[in-house]
Image (cartoon, rainbow, N blue to C red; front, side):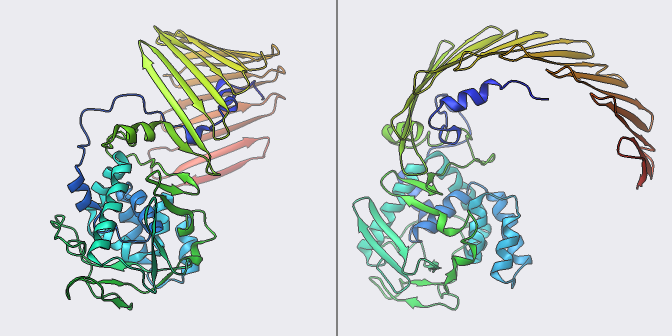
Length: 464
């Protein structure tokens, strides 16, 4: 049955930035979980990857926030070693990993090193998530040091370009990436304290070319054999979808600022809160990039139960959203770029009777009223044209639960379930009177029997 639209789609229609661009950062961070790193610690942290090509740096920073997935992916590649790249890419695409982890499947040596140095990897992920601009700034600082030491130069494998935004490292052939091999504690000139338990790959590249550069004979940068990334180009997580924006100091994925959704990073939900510069913190909270490079800005202020949000979209359209919290509910008003408004009011939260009233930009009003009682609840939704839908549930917490649903056109559907020792029986009756019954017996034994009868015929099968 079709019920009138809820408030969330109305709000989404009003907000020019789109939900994927908005990341609220107004609340203070928790006191425990992440300790802000100073610049020396960040330099040490990024030293192993600072001389990698930009796209590979972006993938590693993003993937490091998913350390458990990195372990899974590395094991996966070990189990499928020798598989043709096209087939491997197809299998990787089916895995439930973040796009950054999938993209690193093209670089087994990198993935293996991240897995071997898992403590460093996890802490790099926390640092990137909480201090993204500080981490990106540290990478540029280390590149400057390597340049001054003579160990960062253009080679047949990669091009080093000096731009106003910083030093850019790109492959000579965008279809073939070479992974630099170097000792991160000596390649930058002055010796850097080695990160504890970090695994340094063998100095001799694997089937690659050693490029002897540097200010002394023991310091060199080499490369592994080339990785053809074209096999992964047909997937949206491939290497070509990743990059860095050195003006804004952000990782970019698919032309949009990448913000990890990992549930394991410290202080999840406070992306960029711990950058050193107050300007960087404000930037992370309020500036976002659209798919075509447009800039969106957002400001949020919360005080005394009132939250106000102002936003400007990539094309200049503005919106406002104001929410007032009070005992048992809240009231929100959203104003779109053309002045249209939407309202939502909720009352009765924390009680057995909750009411929500939503008014859309065209004036249509939807109400949702729920009454809860021992063993069930009853909900009525009334749409902007007066049509209603009802659902009543009884018997919750007992062995007999009944649900009755009536749509706006008057059709009624019922679902009745009776539970007993070792099984249950459920009958569903549709609006036209057709019914279907499913019975399960033998639960808790070595074999269960399922019987289904009704509109789709009769069927019996056993589950062991």
